[in-house]
Image 1 (cartoon, rainbow, N blue to C red):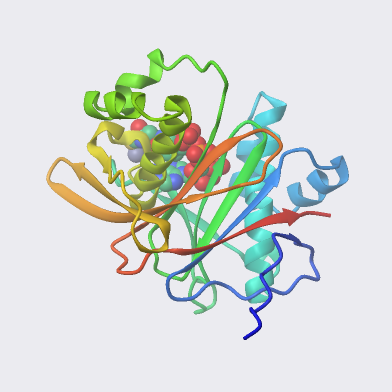
Image 2 (tube, helix red, strand yellow):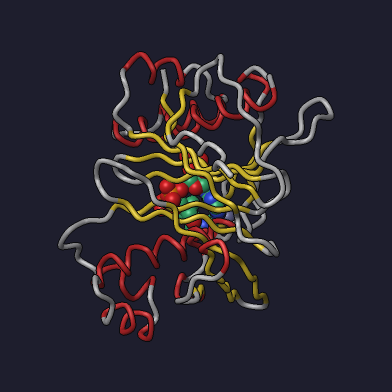
Length: 266
Ligand SMILES: CC(C)(COP(=O)(O)OP(=O)(O)OC[C@H]1O[C@@H](n2cnc3c(N)ncnc32)[C@H](O)[C@@H]1OP(=O)(O)O)[C@@H](O)C(=O)NCCC(=O)NCCS
Ligand SMILES: [Zn+2]
C-alpha cells in the first residue's frame, strides 16, 4: 500500500494561508529563525495587541523586541488562519499560578463574541529561534527551546535545574552536554505546561529517562501540596544553530502527536 504523503516541514504562513487547527492529542510546533526581513517584522508588529506592543516598545535590546514580535506575530497569524478572525479580534489574557495575578504569567486566548478559543498555545524563544506550540482547546501545553552552546558553563544553572542524581546520570551519557540541554528543555516545557514556569524549582520536575509510545517520556512535577503528571516529547528543529526543544502536556492519556513545521513568513 502506498504511504500517505508526509506533511511538508516548511509552510508559508501568510494572510492567505489555510490550515486546520489541531484536535485530540495532536499538537503543532511552528518555528522560525529570527532572521527575517525588516518588512516582515514591521508587518507583524502592526498585528500585535496593545499590551504586547507596549511591552515591545519598552524593551531595550533589539533582539528581545525582534523575538517577541515574531513569537506573538506568528501566533496571531496562526490563530487568524484557524478562525478567519482579524488580528485585532484575537485577545490574549494572562494568569499567574503563583500569585493569582492577571497581568503576568501564562498567556492564553480569550473567547471572543461567544466563540471559544480555537487552540491552546505556548511560546518560547532562544537566541535565534522562536517557537509556537498549538494544541486542541483546553489542553495544558508548554514548549521550551534551549540553545545548545558548545563549552557551556553549567555551574550557574546546574544547581537550579538538575538534582545530583540527574547530573550524575547525564554525566554518563555519550554526550553529557547534549543530554543536559535536552533534559533542561523537557523540564522547562513541563513547568510551562502547568503554568508554574520558573516560579517552581526545576529540580522538582522529574523526567523518565525512557521513551514510551510516540517517543513520549513521563514527567512529574512536585510542587508544595500538588503533584502533576505530564507527557513530554522532544522536537527536532532543523535550525541553523543547534537547539534542544520539547513539548509537554498535562494529564493527557495519549502522547502529543507532534507535527513540526518551519513557518515561512512574508
Ligand atoms: C515565563 C518563563 C517560564 C519564561 O522562561 P524563559 O526561558 O525566560 O522564556 P521562554 O522563551 O521559554 O518563554 C517565554 C514565554 O513563555 C510564556 N509564559 C510566560 N509566563 C509563563 C508561565 N508561567 N507558564 C508558561 N508560559 C509562560 C510567555 O508567552 C512568554 O513570552 P511572552 O512574555 O513574550 O508572551 C520564566 O521567565 C518565568 O517563569 N518567569 C516568572 C517566574 C516567577 O517568579 N513568577 C512568579 C511571579 S509572582
Ligand atoms: Zn505572579
